Image 1: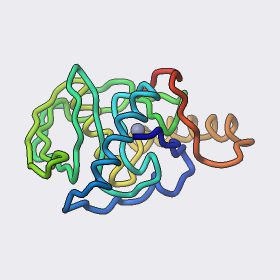
Image 2 (image 1 turned 90 degrees about the horizontal axis):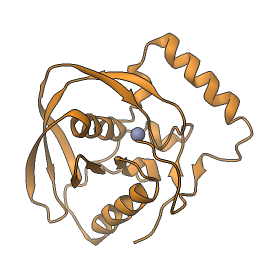
Image 3 (image 1 turned 60 degrees about the vertical axis):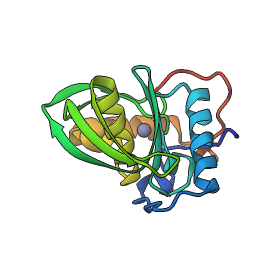
Length: 178
Ligand SMILES: [Zn+2]
């Protein structure tokens, strides 16, 4: 397994609709292992494949003591509404309050190609929805009001105007973010 560079806001991969995996091979299993390792090093609660530049429908979550890979995930049920602050490993140091369904039921394939179903609430439900959004090219910023989004984006552009590219190497001990 290896640590993969994170794609930051501005990377075209973050805005792409990722392709279905359908059949799981060693390459996908290696990707899942790398996603877990990179998420852990970056101290995140979730990571989607396009955040490391691979536009396939694969993501990992580690929230509330539950750690799982989602391949070709779909949300089959939602209930309620909840608002909480979100951040993103691809948009470091930027946070905003996002309203989403409070409870979800998600179906996905695991690394053995077995379809499973997971019910989640709280942070786990939020992480699942945040990662599924990534697979459709959606960022948490898109859920904010236009005014709030423009404010955060102009701050981002100010702070990142001298960046040479849109990827960031993950160190073994960096700051915690979602
Ligand atoms: Zn994210």
